[in-house]
Structure formats: structure tokens, C-alpha cells
Picture 1 (cartoon, rainbow, N blue to C red):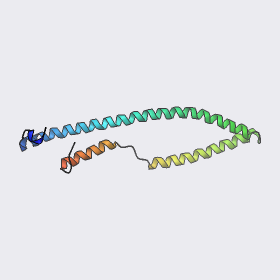
Picture 2: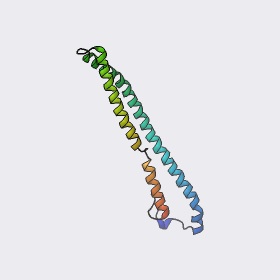
Picture 3: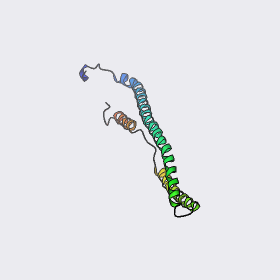
Picture 4: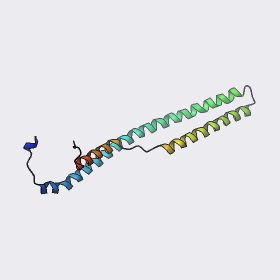
Length: 134
């Protein structure tokens, strides 16, 4: 349907229809935001579950490797000293990782719904008359 085929409406009718259009636009943007966040949350949930499963098995593998390290060092030193060396190394690694992690958390930003933000910007520009809305 071309613009010539559309019925002509008065300025008052167009102004009267504007609040309804804005409410409809707002509802559609909220639906888009909900759909985008649900999709991101679904992928994040699956990812967290898989990482947790990997961490579970990694924990036990790490424990076995630590026992092997203690037993290996115990062939040259007393067993208590071998366990102390491995424990001290673990505490050092733990401290370094925690410091790096806290630094990263301070620098991090929460994820933003980029598609919805771009769509809202288009809407605002269309209302201002700068661009056109698809």
C-alpha cells in the first residue's frame, strides 16, 4: 500500500492517536527487553551449569594431583615437609588469584541489553523526526 492509498486524517486525529501509539511502542520495547533478557539468562544458566560441572570434576582431579605432588616430594624430604611445601604453594596461588579476581570485579560492568537500547534510540530519533522507524 503506497502513501497515496492511505486515508487522509486530520491533525487533531493524528494528535489524538499519538498517546496510543506511544503506549504501543513502549509495550513492544518492554516485550523486546524481556525476550532479550530471557534469552541471555537462558544461555547464562546453561553456561553456569556446565562450568559448575567442570569445576566439580576439576576439584577432584586437582586433589589427586596434589596428593601426587606431596608423595613425589616425600621421596626426597620427610612427608610432613612435603605436605607443608605443597600447602604453602597453594596458599600463595590462592592469594594471587583472589587479588586478581577482586581487581577484575571492581573493573567489571554488568551486561546491558544492547538490542533494546539500539531500538529505543531509533524510536527516540523517529519521534524527534531525525530518522525513520521500521
